[in-house]
Amino acid sequence: IGRLEAADMLLAAPQGAGGDLTICQVLAMETDKQLVALNVGFNHGALPGMVGRIEGGGGLEYDFQIVEVRPTISAAVVTTGNMTAVAVGATARIAVKSSHKK
Image (cartoon, rainbow, N blue to C red):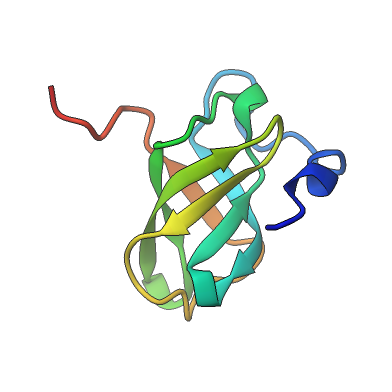
């Protein structure tokens, strides 16, 4: 995750790229910091503060919030769970509506 710029150059467009920013994948993890790298960036519509859920093994799900965004990659902090069942390649779904109440 500390090398977002290098990874940014190597990534393919995520599923749903081109307008429907809902499904992406975990590319890397730092479990001690509760961080994941996702294969979406601001070129795909990702923005800091967006929230979503990672599908872990055994039916477990983990909420996350995007904290840093680059052109084709982003970093997110996992806000629920301890990531024991999350693996590189796990599917993540980003909420398309803001979680902030007006």
